Length: 126
Image (cartoon, rainbow, N blue to C red; front, side):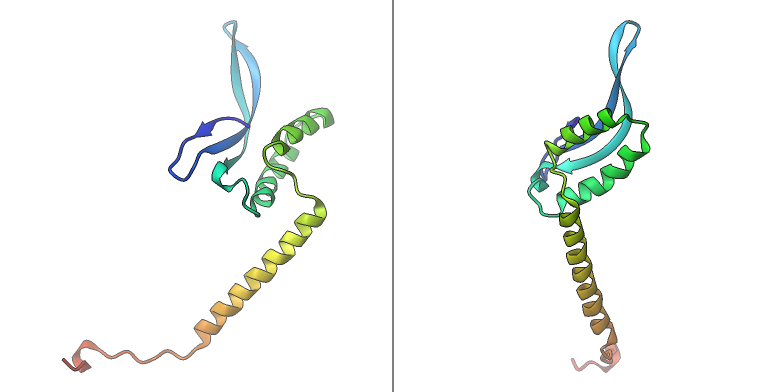
């Protein structure tokens, strides 16, 4: 994990993959890929690991990394944000979809109700 950003709602931690290079004989870090940002206040939030790894996974997979490099990076990230198992991910996605369906149903019920006629300003009794 990379840099900290202080914010009113807590510090943020950026997951940035960097490569060390020498420029004019001095060590410099070049950003290879920005992976994700984590708000420290949300580290214990139930959805965070799923959201984080859903964002990070495809980015890591798109890089030309050896199996060894991939495992090392994944391990370092998992030390901060645990990697959920496939079973946990499947269960979370099912629960999330059920929740979203209940929200869609609730909003459909609200929109299906007949609207009350509004009184215009002219028809109001003073």
